[in-house]
Length: 242
Ligand code: F6R
Image (tube, rainbow, N blue to C red; front, top):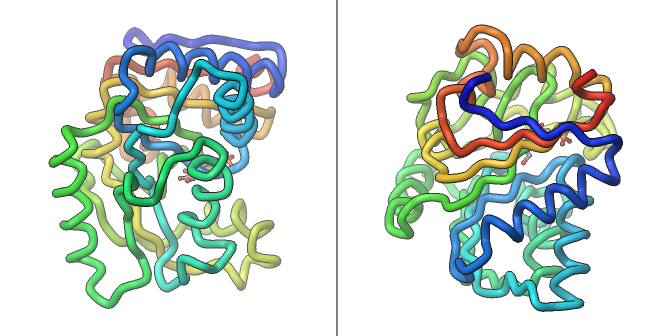
């Protein structure tokens, strides 16, 4: 865990405030920074906290460039369950970031390989990520980089693992309704972020968090590559870490 800073907090509420403090700290003096905010349940409170602080001022996120982390294949962007829809509701709208400032990962077209290439080019054009705000999958995934994914895994279309289908079933009503394919920013993109904040909450993440931070660095736990990355802070609540 040599390369990773771990901040342990009491509970999920403290996690949100601590993560928001750190995001603001990282973005201080970088009003046009490029940020990749994960969806998923864990960072939602952090985004609410950021929006509350932006409303009070002086934190202003409206000039940030935002890079989408992942998306389901074949789901219309206006579908509430699309990840771009979730990103708009949770991060872009509350923080006044216009859609024109978003690098999209589009899963609704016909040429998905081309969409992945365009995405990688667009991320490169903006100079990569200043900050990635990530959650930890129940199987150690980052974005939808399912096991096995190593540090050289590119932006691509993936088959969702049974663990990811199960953990996303609540958003879709049942496991059968969850799309089987998704697109994800490659480990290449995520791993090149200059700063990364990984937020982890709850006892159900305990084992996978320890494998990610203290276990062998292995494609079987994609998040374990964070150990080699540098600039990574993990904020975990007591239930997840102890
Ligand atoms: C979401 C995403 C996923 C989640 C992860 C943790 O865009 O890419 O990797 O970050 O599955 O999800 P939660 O926070 O719901 O436990």
